[in-house]
Length: 218
Image 1 (cartoon, rainbow, N blue to C red):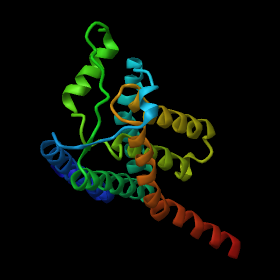
Image 2: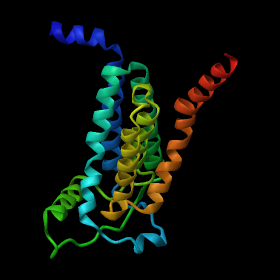
Image 3: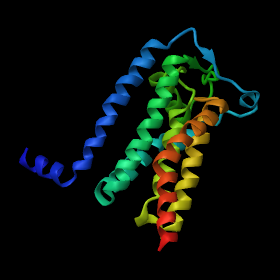
């Protein structure tokens, strides 16, 4: 116990992980409340996008991507860890507010019977664990944007151009994977990007502008 307390004293910004149980509580509440009688999210382009089960690999990379950058910032860059956590969870809370105030879902999931393989098995598991409601805006997209933005704005990673480019590519694939496994409509993806913009302006763009102003003054 003493070791844990010493660790917390060394990394006091870990308290921002307290956002996580709040987000999860609201998420499960929304999943419980929104099951039927929802507005259907759909765009004509959704019908032209094929079902590609293998894209589930990128979909699942959402979780380790958020954890890896979170742990790195927690240990190496407290200021940007706080910024990352606020940006990530404020966008997620916005998604949840929309889900509860404007119940929505999608009817895109295909019948997987007859095409079973490891990828369709994983997709089926995701379908079983996560309902087809509460999709707009896509939390998967806002989370992917949060990871990319955190890496691009982390001072200690500025010199690692390959890592920045790779992260942006990975997060883009994570975002578009949602439509290829029929977990989201393209409308959900676009809404996720839009939902990310105001918090980017608050937590990142405003800071960059301030630093530029200080640089110009000197």
